[in-house]
Image 1 (spheres, rainbow, N blue to C red):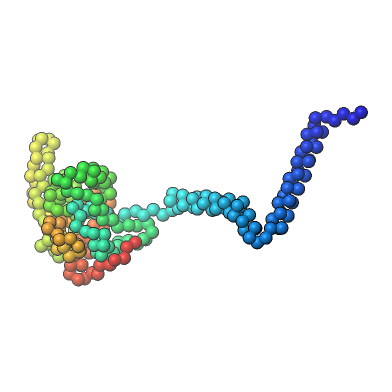
Image 2 (cartoon, rainbow, N blue to C red):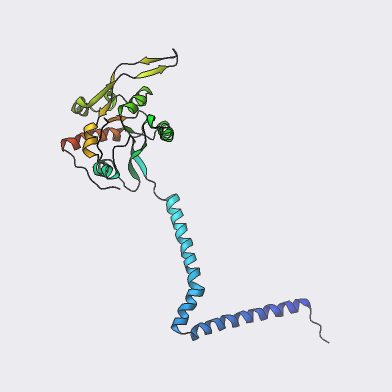
Length: 258
């Protein structure tokens, strides 16, 4: 009598399983070869296409994640906060295209922004005010386009540059008649009272520029100022020159947008 151990039985089953798999694979190949063209297409759709599409979707997702995480980031080289926005999107495209060409060296990594998401304080836009203060504190804002009511608030908060400190002599002389002088009222913590300071040119009256490029019936006067802690004050100054050139016909605006 022959006695087979459990190990021998295990080996035999394993060997037979391999044989069965080979037969099944062979059978599947033979079956596919025997199908008509229409049947082969249906077989492809039912058993292969879904897996292929899933694999492609995964690859696309990985590529997108890689570009998003490791790809080039568009960083602002100029950021203006616009209060009581007098411009449509088309208006912005009309006048800022030429400015982008002046200050942007690499369109893939640099951007120019005119953020019109701010309302005047009396409009009850507390979210816009918090956003402005947060961006101002983070040195994200380079320039301010606003009516007088907002300009006074920011001058009194010592957030705005004295134009005499930042404008080149030739540009200062060129726009001298548009400079706006204000006497800031700044709170003195030592004396616990508000102190009025000497009058200084804190802004440029750009009402003519706004009316020229706005599609609205502009009733307010608008002023342009440069923020003290902005990271790109040089470009904020260049925009003053650009506005003057546009008004004088020395520059051409463009609808090109990066």
